[in-house]
Image (cartoon, rainbow, N blue to C red; front, side, top):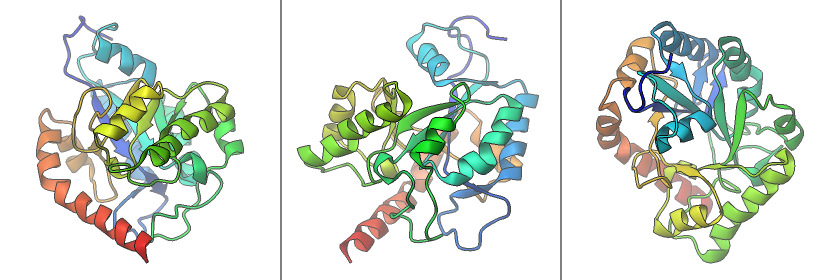
Amino acid sequence: MIGALGGGRQPVIFMYHGFCESRLSNDPENLFVEVSALQAQMRFLLDRGWTPLTLDQWLDVRAGLRPRPPKSFLLTIDDAFVSVADLALPVLARLGVPCVLFVPVGLTGRTAEWLPDPPDVPILSRERLLALDGSLVDLGVHGWDHTPMSRSDTHGLSLQVERSREELASVTDRPPRAFAYPFGDHDEQARAAVAGAGFDVAFSVFDDVGTMAVSRVDVNATDTVRSFRVKTLPGYRRLWRMAQHVAFARRLLRVALTRGQ
């Protein structure tokens, strides 16, 4: 039950990527969460009175247009891997947990070219995206081809932001409202491009820079229910940001080196 306006804590924004039935041995970034773990994590929240929010509800809470629940969360999933539809969405549908799924629009129906391991991870096709339950899944943009966006020129930003938004709108028949920066990488020009394209919100990974860079809490393959519980505590995101920033910087460097080969 939603309490008084502004009476609860800020909603926690969780960030997932892919899913699997059993732990992958070739997943160095720990991106693929066992679907049984996802179910346990969502059960943990729901059994303790957490309210799952749709993107609309989260935007209203953020804007002060809707009462803030005492404990609430927004579930976001990056990359639009096939495993999201095959494994995660049936669990979320049973539990009544909506999500925002961020799509690298230029790679639909292809594979995660930016990801060396595990190799050839399939991304949902346009047909499968169109078939998703709109009451459960809100589609957002994750760039065109999962390229880091800071220091991009005008043409690059136009492709990653404007063309991606137009293409996804042509699939869903409605303009997407949310953007997630690939690798959480952005700068002032990237944020301005996202705002100028008409997005209501953009999600980063570590840093908060207003509505066009809202940080999230990463959930990965190493999380137990106990560590997941820690990630729901107030102040966790700040500590995680400090501890993990170096690891993400190294990941970006590896991507840059791989693309340069």
